[in-house]
Image 1: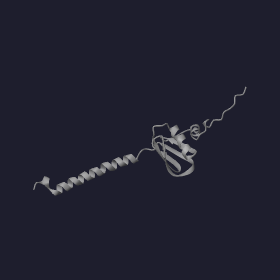
Image 2 (image 1 turned 90 degrees about the vertical axis):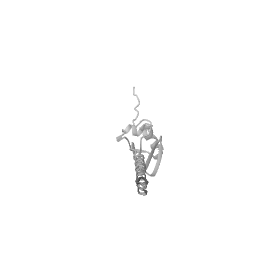
Image 3 (image 1 turned 180 degrees about the vertical axis):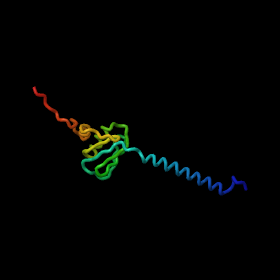
Image 4 (image 1 turned 180 degrees about the horizontal axis):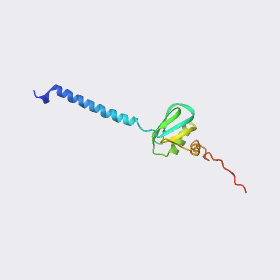
Length: 122
């Protein structure tokens, strides 16, 4: 019997094939799960654990925090739509940078962006 026909060689090749397949699939699954968080929102009122799809991104909310990966929409759109779904936001962060108070007020539905209009006096 030749060594290439040995049952032990077939078992070794099968083991290598299974090991390689397992490594490839586990690496790709880990990569899919580890999308970086682009949006973080702190809510004014806690919510039950939920998931919201906003303009192509999935936002996971629990307690007073929501997180989501980058979408094709602007952060202002995502912020406003999230505020409409879960209630007023205490803060909103995009890629580690918090939006200013004016943008947050617009996000929460204030048409003036937190500014008060002053009537012209003549």
